[in-house]
Length: 479
Image 1: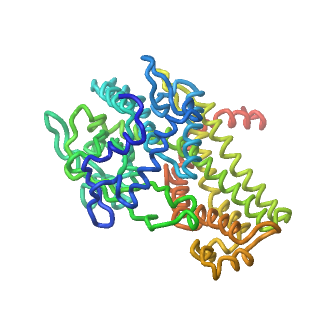
Image 2 (image 1 turned 45 degrees about the vertical axis):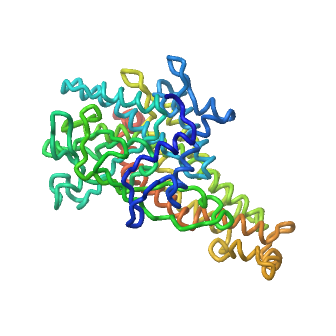
Image 3 (image 1 turned 120 degrees about the horizontal axis):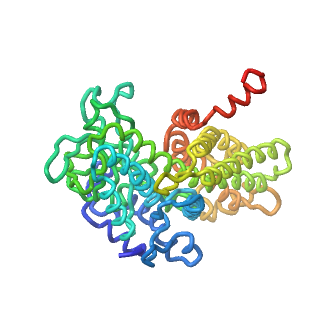
């Protein structure tokens, strides 16, 4: 089929999928007043492929001479990783700091499946790699949008899958048939599921032998019978572009993804009980996805720096010593993240089959740096901006002839900046840092793609301390 147009992508979502929003079944996700914003936001990936300005970044040519989305380019070099990062960064910048994620996350999973499936086949004489490769070509050649469901609802966080109060807190195989498996359970924090074509399901953690039924990975179309998506209403209130210039027309849907005895044919099954590979597959996905994460955080930290510079200028305080200090801290925060992200790609290495992955140590350092410093960065931006972030007037007040000119007069800043200009800037910063869109970013900073503790654990595991230890011994004369 080849590259799709934005309209072809939209039309492909009209398939009768089972989606609920605020208790009601959604008849058509492309026309629903909230979910359609997520659909139109996701069109960015398809628009970039058609735009001459971005085509070379967004599209590559296959061995058969046919073009396909760069997201589906299996990394074969550090340059492939760098180009992937730049594509993600560019798309997110066009999306006003909101990542698109309808191809990024799915291909993160596909790359991990390519690397792990061969290992499973070698040990268990399975044929998972052939299935992964066939599914990959199906998605690539048809330019599909793909999401990933990994995080189980977990129940009692102190217990493993088999020890839960009921057995379905982790998604599991409940029946094996000659033609496939039946799965039951639920995943949470599933991004973009309402508006993609395919869903990849991965284990969320390492498993013991007793957990074998929970060691399952597969892919299904989103309209598969028994798959039920309960969409989060967070951030769904109506907005206008004056009050919310970033998020009024930008949305990412999150769902609780329920597998109500869903049948999966064997051709779509990539792990089915090989418990010792649940952990490597979960980790393999995370290694790619955290690199995606730090790539799409770059426009967000740039926006924080730009917001601070803008408000310092409009408020007439750009020369204040404490403001300069905060600006330097913000610049250092943003540019350290950029440097670590680029270094994660440059340090990337290929496996024995030439599939490159970003360096896990530097990737996790980048993600930890971003998450650990995010709320302090918000503090600096809000301090420079001022309290009008949450007390300013609305668009209607400027349109009202009785109040508009008064507000333009009294809410102004330095010479040449009237109240409407300053309010527009305030509203952008408020949308970014204080409202539900800002809150969404803030929670994602801590929890998305792994918690702070998960990143610290990976830094500890990935760092080879032998060189430093031997050097210390040498300096002490005890080598």
